[in-house]
Amino acid sequence: MDKQGFTTSIVHGDRNAGVEHGGLRQPIHTSVQYGFERVEDLIGVFQGTKKGGYNYARQGTPTTAALERKLTMLEEGVGSICFSTGMAAITAVFLTLLRTGDHLVASRYVFGNTNSLFNTLRTLGLEVTTVDAGKTEHVAEAITPKTRMVFVETIANPGTQVPDLAGIGELCRARGLAYVVDNTITSPALFKPKHVGASLVVNSLTKTIAGHGAALGGAVTDTGLFDWSQYPNIADDYRRAGPKEQGLLQIRKKGLRDMGAALSSEQAHQIALGAETLALRVAKCSDNALALARFLEGHEAIGRVFYPGLESHPQHGIAKSLFKSGSWLLSFELRKPEMMIHVINALRLPVKATGLGDTRTLIIPVAPTIFFEAGAQTRKAMGISDGMIRLSAGIEETDDLIADFEQALRHA
Ligand SMILES: *Cc1c(COP(=O)(O)O)cnc(C)c1O
Image (tube, rainbow, N blue to C red; front, side, top):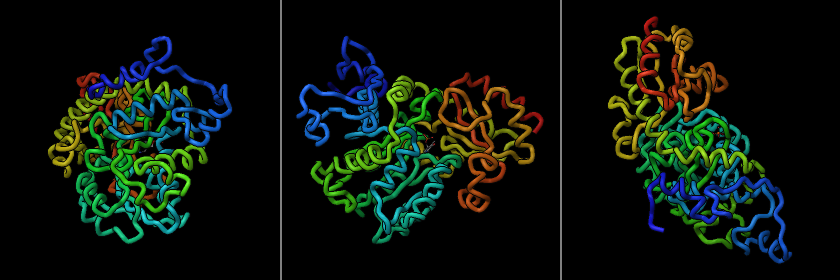
């Protein structure tokens, strides 16, 4: 079929793949085991010679496979693997593609649990250097002969820093490095990391792709741009696959099958339902985030506002040229940080909760919660002040959100 638009392809994805009885959705396959009439077929599935077969749900089911097909379509990739969470997907990428002694260069501004994971990698004898990836030179200067991979987030949570995504992609291509981009905050509705040369794209499906906060999930998508036959850490068993397939094959066998963080069919179904409205929700959330960012920037009680859609944002130019809109994540500080708890409590609409990319607006003070364990020193290095407040804009009516902030800030 001709290439279709984003939402057209996702809402017709299952039907066009031929669901039995003319179903519009892939059913929820609850089987753990898959049986065969002929044992030769069972053997073929184990040996990878029978394509599209299933054997045991830890390696995937028809329902998770349908979600993988959709994600591959949305990210314009060659294949995807779903995991039980976004962190499971990220962990699988690092642990299956890096070896003791290898070097990873990563953005200094990343999701707190990913930063915490870097410390675990260090205990395993991997070297991790974090840099301000806003300038490609910083990444280039950190590269050593042992560097295998570069990892960045499209918009950093919570500080909203945007790396020089295209410049780093060019650098990785020239140096033969795997380029891994966490696309969670933008999602494929706003940005496709393949367009800046990413090798692998990671998405936390828990956030805006599901959008309802009723399921956890994560995924890795291979864009097909990286030649895994030149990558040193692929096991001989997986060298038999094509040069574009070896990376994902190793991640599926070592990262999903052996490590076991499989997505259930029930969760995959919930995520697939949410994903149908991804583009519509992200557009509305982005409109709300921009309206709130403008309102907050103009308010006398507010200090700094961090939102890539604002002209005042240091990487506004990059964000404007690469992303369809500024996304739903925004952070801000009060002029009087000591009023932070009072102001958050005075808000009626935003839910005082962690989480991102929900249909409801969520709000959280960053330092005492999601970055509490990180400690003051790490927070400082990551540009997180004690008074930073993170907001994930939902799909509520814009006027309701602004009115609520107006009343809550009256006492700040
Ligand atoms: C939430 C998040 C993750 C982790 O995803 P989970 O599904 O919660 O494990 C990874 N990266 C970013 C940028 C996130 O916001």
